[in-house]
Length: 442
Image (cartoon, rainbow, N blue to C red; front, side):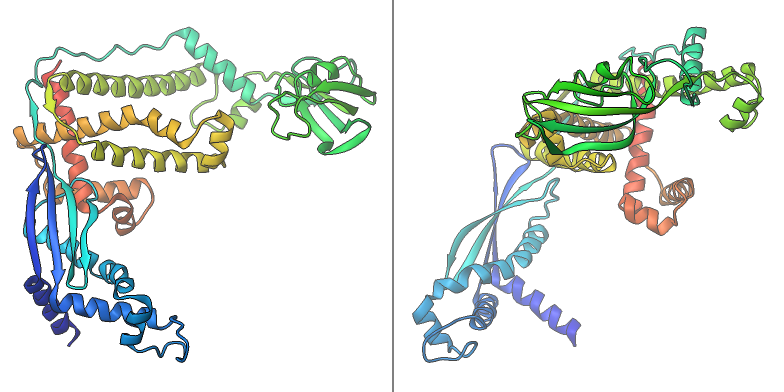
């Protein structure tokens, strides 16, 4: 019964909707005008009235009981139009897509063209894929860089690894030095009064980390364990707390313990702590480090190589990219950036404060990348069509299975997050196109 009603509604929409298609100066920018009138519009107005009636207040009538004619005299028929238009917007959009046969590449914009008791007209601005001409994409003679790993790079990374596993041991004698960690109590006073956030106990402060106010750590240098000292510093003028910005304060500091870094030897204990399979000597460790550096370098070089090819091909392309496509890509990059910040525990508002920037600054910063992303995507799709590169459903299903296993997910869960099997197919086709470009441009 519900299905029959839905079919009747669709027929009614088709009967009561008129369509007009206009083209902008750019061939891929279209205006589709949809008019909704007749019985569908009458029903939309009825629904709008029932919604308004629930909260309408008119003297002499109980709430929710105001008759239609009294409501319209009191508030005007026009008060029903906007809600009614909202209720038929989705149907109008679907009809615009169905009858125009257009495939939008960005979310269509919609304007209200006319609105009256007799009906509503929407103008949908639909942007389809722009025409693109790739004049040359072969024989560009672009080669990848050669990858080598020097002994100096291996030793440098080995030093980082040893530093990472360095142990802190208590310094029995002497004073605080640069690189030491001082375990301190501190409390800050401004004009003799303790201020909020200026107190800490048994705080481990690495001297030279510059995590405290400028001048603080330098004055801890030379103190002994058990020593107390008043340290005078001045907060920076741009300090976050306005009541402290630019102010001179005194910190009462006591050093409880001094710790210093103890270098590790390449011995059995170190390799056991390292926990790397097959690594039990300096030689095997260096070989593992070399493999790691080489893999990272090869990945970096590969990415630079692909970027160079894409840039080279893009110099031989003719296309007019609508700003809406770039804007949508900027929005996607903004969301990705926000997620990256969240993973670091930083909100966008906090990022703007730290960098003394704004959302507009960030959007402008991402615009060039967004334009390149759109250009490269259109370019690769055109080359893919020219070269008739296709990926079968079977190939895509196999790829989805492998990726789901790689990320330790169920296949259905992976596809839901990736965007479906069509997206896997598309991704594989793009990758095959890039591989072809690498082959024909060496």
